[in-house]
Length: 167
Image (cartoon, rainbow, N blue to C red; front, side):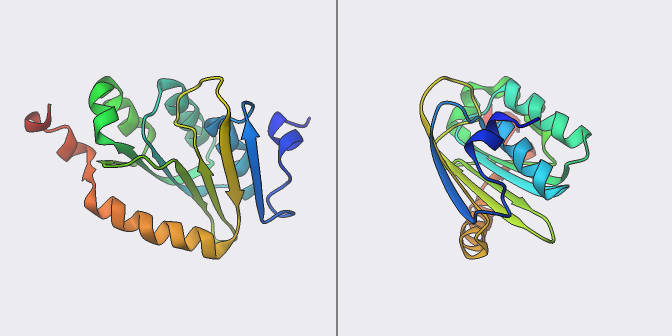
């Protein structure tokens, strides 16, 4: 049975870069659609803010064996407002970082494939039009991955962020 993602996007191996603007794609479902094609992968996600719905979906993908290692980068300002999700984020992701972040990226990496998603959508669910680009272009993936690694090094890990002086 085809999913709504199959009706909107072409398989990753048939089209290197594809874009979408609309209300039908949500980041958790899109990530599942990608992982169904790549198989188990390392996943890095950046967002301004997250939700328990996204985190539950991510945990389900991990339990299905589709996520090897995972990293989440969220904005420290947004997370201060949703502090109660901090422990939930740590349960969902292997590594949780907080920094000055407004990017919304998903990097999915296996030995055979690299997939980058650029989106305007946070990990919250609304009915707004969102822009999304999905690419398997290795040069674009490597560019964003290299820049992101620098951002991650500058960001606080969950334990540092959750220390008493930051609360």
